[in-house]
Amino acid sequence: MLICMQSTSVRIDGETHEELKRLADELGTTVGRTVGLAVRALRQDRMGQQLARPLRDDEKAWLDADLG
Image (cartoon, rainbow, N blue to C red; front, side, top):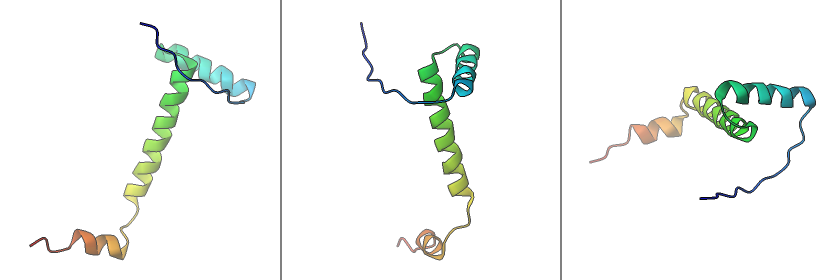
């Protein structure tokens, strides 16, 4: 089965491209998949930062709401 993916070019400097190729080789995957993994890791990191911040008053009130 042939799966065709859409592709888009992204301009990056040569050093970053070489690092992506090294990482892809270490991971046994493609440069494109490595970029996808990096984006996911960055998204997860940002989510973790958001979850670690103190709750706002309205968030506390919502969590403490009486369900009965």
